[in-house]
Amino acid sequence: MGTMVRARDGASRRRLLVLEALLAASAAVTVGVTARVVYLESLETTNLVWNLFLAWIPLVLALVVYDGARRGWSAGTLATVGLGWLLFLIATVMAIGRIAYWGVSKLRSRPHATDRAAWNGTFRVN
Image 1 (tube, rainbow, N blue to C red):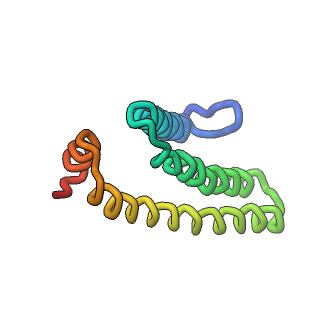
Image 2 (spheres, rainbow, N blue to C red; image 1 turned 90 degrees about the vertical axis):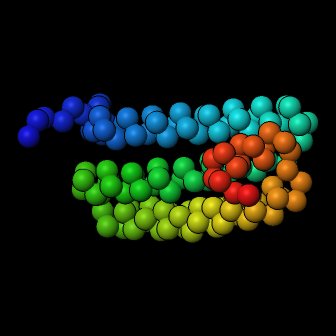
């Protein structure tokens, strides 16, 4: 097996590439929501950016717990950070539920023409 290149903090190159891809996707969503707000002059979907931010928290906390365990942190510290992870993970699942509900109720009731085309093209909802 080959040697894995590690960054300064010990994270693997693969992890850094995944995090960069997730950050790029998050930035694209944020830009898309911003463009929609400017185009429609409506703040209706800005909560999606907040939910996206909240979804990042359990990922970061999971990485902190993983790296902390590898570095020999105490069980109490790991449990504290792990509890924060669990609380934010539950909040993330609830946010996904809200997004799914928003997509079904609001998009079908008053869809904007471009939203409908994007939604149907992406998720094949008729």
